[in-house]
Image 1 (cartoon, rainbow, N blue to C red):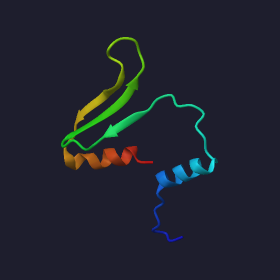
Image 2 (image 1 turned 90 degrees about the horizontal axis):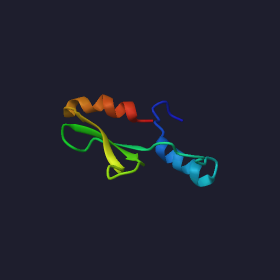
Image 3 (image 1 turned 90 degrees about the vertical axis):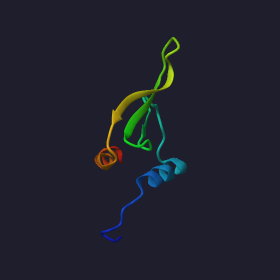
Length: 78
């Protein structure tokens, strides 16, 4: 392969799952990272607890200038 080749790790992951070579045993936590809102970054996490404040909720909210989102996105990339 070329030295400039960059594999698509997400597609490789799904391919391995589809072939049955990779299986989930359990998932402890799941979090979504949202960068689409101008000048904002936030995380959405699932909270399983009693009461009204449960379910998918914003777990982290930060004001981030658009030109500062690049390093944050790279941090969360596989």
